[in-house]
Image (cartoon, rainbow, N blue to C red; front, side, top):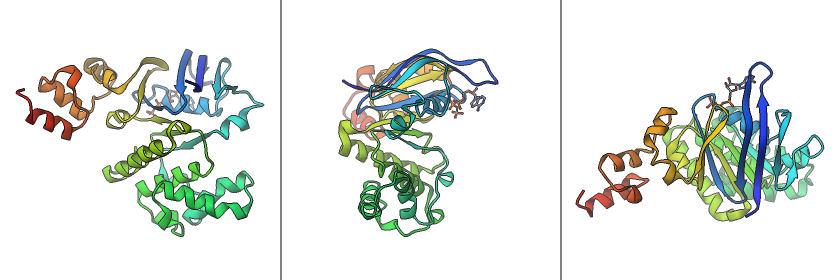
Length: 274
Ligand SMILES: Nc1ncnc2c1ncn2[C@@H]1O[C@H](COP(=O)(O)OP(=O)(O)OP(=O)(O)O)[C@@H](O)[C@H]1O
């Protein structure tokens, strides 16, 4: 498996504080959906910024698809990574949804004749093609984040980092963004690597792998089902298990049969003697 991102022996501190990351190493495989979780201030957003080359680190190195991140390769590396941030209202520059998606393409000097097709294709991928002429401020939070995702997709990145992209959304908005992510993963397969920074373990369980960060340290790095068996350890870190997993354990469902969602759990219970 090729690595999309390799972080090796990274040490980073903000000028005002002590080391946040010390000798930190982590890999993200090509085509993988990785969730990064951790309590407030554990270093998740800083890690995303480091990968994007937004912060200057002194020790260690970061490779993106084999290219070492340096001042010289910064533009090349960034062109492979798209980023969606937490606040949907801070991400718009265009007067309409289509203008907004066009903005990044203009920055990349795409010939204007090629733009409409690319914009339409990006909006279709997030189910927002009927909103091209709408003013972004008239959209719901979930719709705004799907447009932010379309703006990133239009640039055809190989990696998308979502930094708490659903944190400010209502349950419906969260659902819409998560099902869009699922569809994107299905469509692009190994051509798209997703890194999702989140507090929400219900979201993390959709990932292929979950990295738990605590004060700049990688504590666990494993598949969601294995991680969610660590109820007590997660609690200590201020992280909750997904509701269905907690219920499964409380009801005595054997570990290997733990269910990740309530519908599966109810079906399992209706057929078992627990
Ligand atoms: N610009 C900055 N200058 C100095 N310290 C910072 C800066 N940004 C973050 N920090 C500190 O670095 C640590 C990690 O912050 P970071 O934002 O990466 O954590 P996080 O896990 O993303 O938190 P949250 O879940 O609250 O977003 C915190 O202690 C924070 O106070």
